[in-house]
Length: 114
Image 1 (cartoon, rainbow, N blue to C red):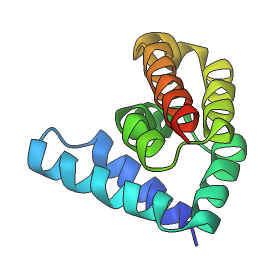
Image 2 (cartoon, helix red, strand yellow):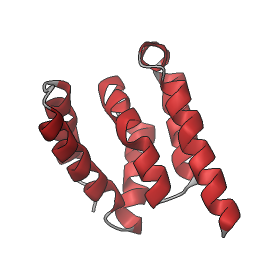
Image 3 (cartoon, one colour):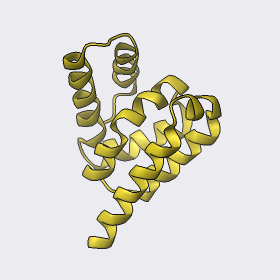
């Protein structure tokens, strides 16, 4: 089960740290939560569509390539693109369009191999 409260807490923690070690630890914990199983992943995508904040979206861009590699999904890409439209300022500020394009390419390549 995807724990949205824990995700929010981790995103806030990420926002407030510059320590590489701590950032890596936060990213790993987030990825484990998201990718734990198919249900967690689906719940995360629903969270993206309905509740994810602009700041959390910015944090997501830091781990989106890893998510796409571990769990290639066009549903994830669609939700990611939805967030780009929902948060245009964050998208521009953090150049998230390039992260979305990279994640989409990873998904495309992964699914073509199968």
